[in-house]
Image 1 (tube, helix red, strand yellow):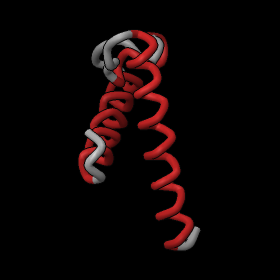
Image 2 (cartoon, one colour; image 1 turned 135 degrees about the vertical axis):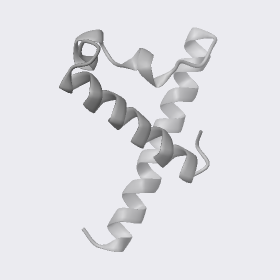
Image 3 (cartoon, helix red, strand yellow; image 1 turned 180 degrees about the vertical axis):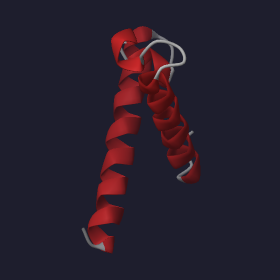
Image 4 (tube, helix red, strand yellow; image 1 turned 120 degrees about the vertical axis):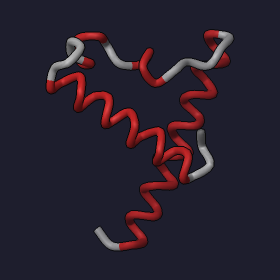
Amino acid sequence: MDDEDTIRTDLEFAVADACWRHEVARQLGTPIAEESLTPPEMKGEPDTALRLAYEERLRALRAWRRARGLA
């Protein structure tokens, strides 16, 4: 993927994610946390490799959003 594709897909994802989150908040009357969007079985049990990977992904996603002014 070249730089233009990277930038374009970053923007497309950011806009789509923001629109979806806005609509979820509008429908539910309140914003929801990222953790609420993931079924428990995909998070893994505490102190497992799956939970550690999930938490690292969540940390990285939050950093990605903060870096783009989306958090």
